[in-house]
Length: 259
Image (cartoon, rainbow, N blue to C red; front, side, top):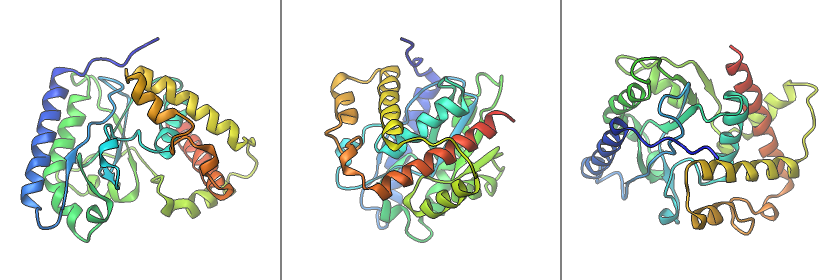
């Protein structure tokens, strides 16, 4: 089975800069941020065609379980599933990251004005990240922002970062938007939730093997007894919400891929 490439030296150096900036954030914003730490992103490709960008990592009570960003919820695995299958047509030709790599409590990250202050130091590092991923200037990854807030920060910094497309964030706050979007699709092939759930979980195995995760980590993330893939833990309403997310990202990513 194919494995993810080794992180190139320039990316490893960049991760050291990320860690240093997190330490600086803890000093600079000690009155606003109770706790912050660096969480690495999954590394799928050294020169990806697409780069998906969100705001920043966040954590709840189980901070010690968050070892890698974007692999900590069913919604995370769902967006990977759609990116792999519909954006990249069956390949890991994408990168996923945040503006800030400083993981903090969601309540603190969302406090008025804090993002604008924190991002001043992170946006230059994001630009450097895109340059490192450009494959020696062969091409720059097409940027897909995950949420209007991300798009605004990227397009209003100096110099601005070109955004190819914005998609809705997978947050619960967008449930009504996903539902409205899917209703507007009209006729669509029906997919039972159980089939989608099983497909995403099987894909999770492929993804984590590709990233060379340990058996122990894979078991924690993918074991049905765990909260992420505990099918019995989802209400019918929650299942429908996940289906709406699936149809949204499937359609949007197919449209982007076909452009």
